[in-house]
Image (cartoon, rainbow over all chains, first blue to last red; front, side, top):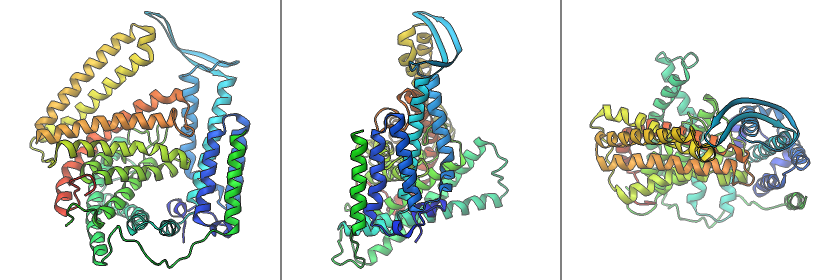
Length: 271
Length: 260
């Protein structure tokens, strides 16, 4: 059964021991990493958290090539952090680079807009960039190890009504269905002479916007058909199952890993 | 057909609406360049569906906004679980505002276009006017109050110019068709963009666990978010409500109350 990231990006955890953990454990490990990010506010703690996350990614068997999917995000966030710290803020420290972009006499003084790079601003930027890597690793770890079926089992084992688990299941099925629908609509447009490679961004925007209407119209038809099919089974969204076909318990390894994750959070909180 | 009780039709439409919003988010982030912060792009097509979903599906639309944004936060945006849980309220707000406005003020929305030229002018005037107004306020808050002239003059021109253009957009909107429906829609678009921008930019830069961007980035992210949302909501969102509201009503998927 492919994981969520496996289906979206073709990247998933390959180690059986990690894939075999309870869904709660696979949720708790990245969740505790997310909590640790909150306490990583200096360069050493932020960088050590990157190493911890990287180790977990390695231990789970997630290939680092998965990072390629996030390259645009890493690049854009990093450049935005640099731009906002060097162009919109003046963080005190030893000045490394300074250049005036705009300077004029305003009513209440001189207005200056500078590129202002200090050693403190660089450290601050590095902390933010390290946190970005830690948060991306934590997201990869979660999505790369959990399957949609496990989420449904998890919801069922919590005793939630059918409505919740079927909605979760339909969401994951829906993603696949609508990606396929979108590609079909795109191909239909290309068959009518649309060249997405050559068109300008404005034209592309308009074309993709046009594709939205058939996509949503398909959603309406599908929703109607699937809800009718569910109605015919005689269950309501509020119904609860009295029996479960899949027993889903926490093992010793699960408990040990949850405890270890908690300890890591406590360690970062008391850093 | 569903009465006033929650049925499968609501749950299924909610699940599929969440899926479609998520797919659009992924597609737009892969096709169009991301400006700075993920989710903050002038061409973030996914944002366009949240206001229509709020109009059509009430609170289910708002929930679809929340959950699709939560998954978008994880992939492809790469936020952590906690950051994503907080950030996702931005898209909940984006859908809940039209849901509230339409359920309180317009029980039977009629998006029939009687004057197509007015419908074409509406997005340009509303988004341009509100964007100028917003930029004017940002100029005054960021620089005008500290430096005075020439920022205060720029602020006055931008605010008054923006206000006149936005009002012209609203008046044009009233001429498109049913005045009450279109007024509610324009107010929904403006408020949804502003409040989701405040929450979205705020959780990206000021209040999250921790914010992925430094607080100095708040104003650029906020302005980018609101202008981006205004553009896609007033262009694509308008096209969607015009084309699909009747289809939603005919299929029985339209939610008249909050949940059913």
